[in-house]
Image 1: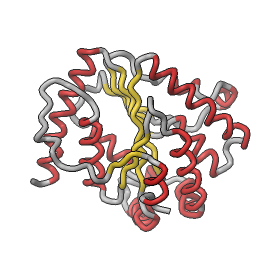
Image 2: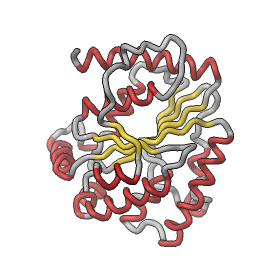
Image 3: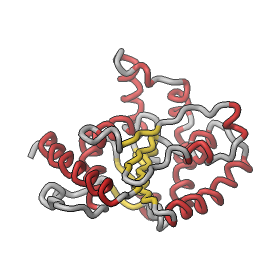
Image 4: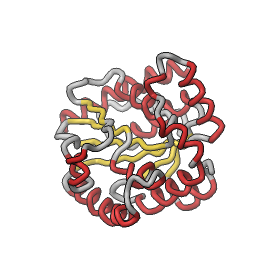
Length: 248
């Protein structure tokens, strides 16, 4: 079966899932993290392609304002959490603190340490309040990242994606790897688990991640045949997988 046919079947299943979210008043929060150019934008575009824009919200916050810098770190994210019947996808999230902020020294060491204490309590509180939290980390190789950066520079339709952080991403590759590993090890909670996605191939990333998301949720009229292909590119963030499977 061709990738486009597989995706069509998955789109149908996503619509079924959304109907269940609306009918049951669920609050589904999907977080996508990953290196720069890992494919978060493209993956989210595939997920929301045929969903209702009224009940599907994509959150991609920019740099905090001076006033927000004075707020409790998690405060600006709270306003974007899903209400009953909504699916919210975070294209980067509060985990910025454990990644780019840590590597680029946009936060203090004490703020970084405090984050790990607070995020567990924060996500546990959300889970106890009925939020369903699923977290995906898209992992790509250094070679693939450099290739995608080069494509952005050459493609006039992608140049809006270029930022000074891109150049730092390659320079600080090892620092980002270390920060990623620590983040995954310390924040893979039972109530809000991490799943790693091998994302060097964009089509495989979209199919595997969407299939994995659908398999984790119950909804009416689920078509098991549409979800029958393997999710070999998605795996739990266990210490063994972090050590052996991630690009270093």
